[in-house]
Amino acid sequence: MRIALINENSQAAKNSIIVNALKKVVEPMGHEVVNFGMYSADDADQLTYVQNGILAAVILNGGVVDYVITGCGTGEGAMLALNSFPGVICGHVETPLDAYTFAQINDGNAISIPFALGFGWGGDLNLEYIFEKLFCEESGQGYPRERAVPEKRNKAILDDVKKVTYRPLADILPELDRELVRGALAGETFRKEFEKNCKDSVLKSAVNAIID
Image (cartoon, rainbow, N blue to C red):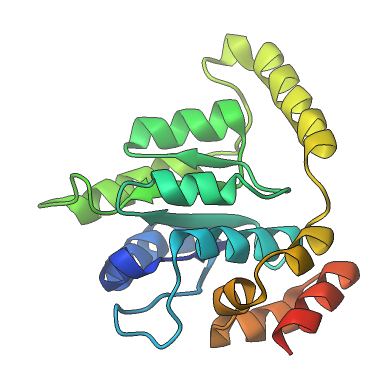
């Protein structure tokens, strides 16, 4: 699995703490971490939490990555932004229990963490425990296990609803503010990863028409 980390501007200074905790947990599991930044508060390419949503949607829908770890001060804004787009199911995760139940019950492909609220002494350990429970086993198996059948049925219903209520991302991007999208996709890591790994030719054409 390829797992992306995306930080917005208010919490960019924590990027190294987050990516180190993520790599420590998931690389021994055989997963790959791709750090899309922001890497520091002084980065030239600044991201708002709304742009986190755009970037996450593009790399998930394009098959560039399989999972996105993101957040903001409270985690709420980034969660709402990611869930504004098709092909994304993002949970708000504060604790290891949140991580485990979201993975097993909701079977999403992104989480948003509050990187400011309650992030004090031991914050890095809490991140490690969150990532351990998020990826400790195959997601979508249900919790508790005797609830697996109705929970999987509900997830399938949600997926079907989203097919109706969301348009293709390639149709959405050209109608958004062009500079907002260009800013979200300006990072050097995005350009390299998207060009190399995007599996959706229609989306790739739509993105390149905006950023080139």
